[in-house]
Image (cartoon, rainbow, N blue to C red; front, side, top):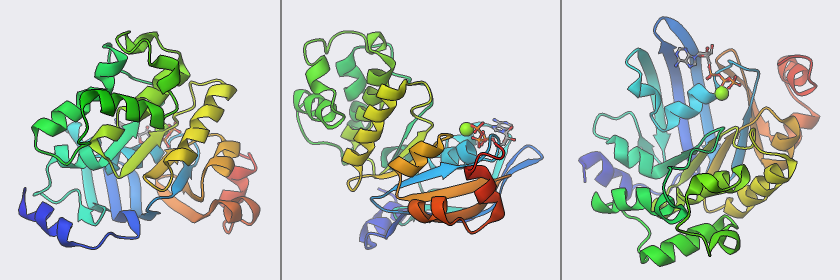
Length: 268
Ligand SMILES: Nc1ncnc2c1ncn2[C@@H]1O[C@H](COP(=O)(O)OP(=O)(O)OP(=O)(O)O)[C@@H](O)[C@H]1O
Ligand SMILES: [Mg+2]
């Protein structure tokens, strides 16, 4: 354990799972995020909306440090996750990935069995001595799949390849495989965009099940989904956060003209 990690353990749990201060990000000379100050409440579902190219994915990718693998990305500012600055030089990437799980637009299970998909990250983090689910592999597989409401469907075919599942099932599996390493934050970048309405509804139901135990930040282009499936909502435009409010308030009485125009479908 590093000194920074030990110090983080002594801090009381913050109200905000993610606390972003003056985050600026450049891809080469192009600035994609401008002075983003954003605090995401712990245990709640927050949606992030805004027109294509406004920086939603860039922001999400900054919260689990995916952007940094691109050599031409420069980041200024800080992001605290559960009270710890993830850009602190003392914080290791594996520690960030343990705290922050991410789900992408297209489900991306590994081309191995359903069971091994669930156990893959757990094995990795358990080897590194992390605080992971303490159960046996069988218990972990069952509990994770039950949590995402998939157990009854797949319990008789755990050794089958995950890629044989339907898209909805694959996306649920991609959420399930994050859980055994006990993350605090789940980032979801348009997790339903490849799903049909029934699959979308199933994943939204799942989000409500996970709410409370996890902090969920979900990007969506679907206004109805943001409205139904989140408690707070963040509207971004051209790399800036324009508005952040309770979802119910933002959709009824948006403060900014740009927000109103966007949610009423006038652009984007
Ligand atoms: N890897 C990259 N290299 C260079 N520029 C990038 C890269 N990724 C994103 N950008 C640029 O940064 C800006 C923000 O992109 P980002 O993908 O974060 O937007 P978004 O809000 O997620 O859009 P969408 O709704 O289409 O997914 C865009 O102008 C985009 O072209
Ligand atoms: Mg995106």
